[in-house]
Image (cartoon, rainbow, N blue to C red; front, side, top):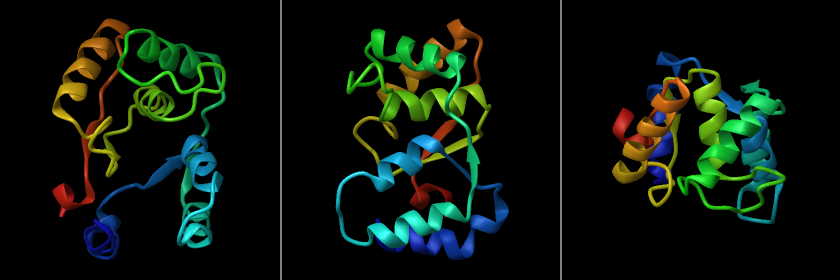
Length: 133
């Protein structure tokens, strides 16, 4: 995964407008893991989509209430629900992730499309860096 991500970043990232969100920044700053300082520094160079607004919170709450995303902390909206809500709100084309369990998962994507259609939102393509190579 690491090799595919680096390869995508060096060979293909120029083909995309790359942005991140405050939710990603928060997740990267949480905890203590290998290469954390490098990861935090990397996202500081990327445009950030704001995530602190009531409409995004409502979308995230809808996903959690309809069991699309885990109820990690409904008051703080961390994790998958907020990532998906930000992408839907800002009409992001691709959500790039290695989270195969909860995000880059065909069953979840089908549910997300149905929910976003009900909410009249667009659904990003959820892909791994390897798929975009």
